Image (cartoon, rainbow, N blue to C red; front, side):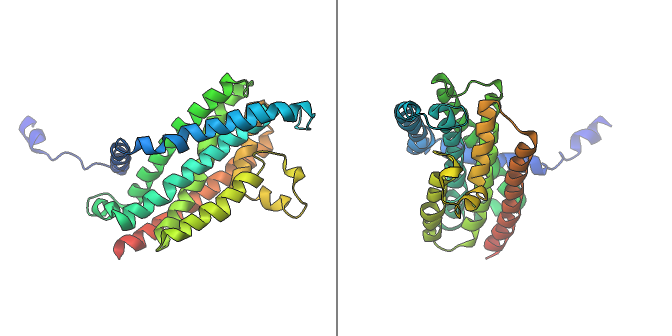
Length: 270
């Protein structure tokens, strides 16, 4: 019996293991490129927090702006947390995916292994989740040190920001796997994500927008991320509203993952 057991083949690695190997491959690759991402991932958000939240915030507070009882720092820091997650998530879903399919073609090499496309995408999104977790926790720690977060529920704000970032990463991965040129991604960053960053409640209440633009802002995933992070940071969570925000972001993540899987399968068959 012992000899037979010794000769028995080891069980084949499961889907979770193969997705973890894709995650590990991304981590090993990042060891050679992390210096180029420090500014975008950590320094830019913190500079925004200091310049807008702390310095400009003092002026806004002196003018007595109506921010629902929050100081401007307490108002803007959760918005910047969600916006940072948007930028990180979109960055992971866009050009790295296009590089894996077109420029470096590393995804074709992975597809030649037992790794299946859903496992490849799961590993890519797991890596995006890890990067989002590190970036948002660092930002939240700096914001808390400046007094932006006072509620114990603020400890959950990075998790909400990670969900917001993944809700951008998956749809952007679908787009990246579908288009033939990086110009489409550049256009999305300039004409979709940048206006969303400015007009989704990050820096001022949506009530300040023109009436026709306010419903458009409500429909953006960043607004849902900002509203969820802000309610947690302030300790003023409405359960029904929070469920709407979480459900919206989860639905967008699921839809993006389905579309990305199909687009990757089509592209890797070519």
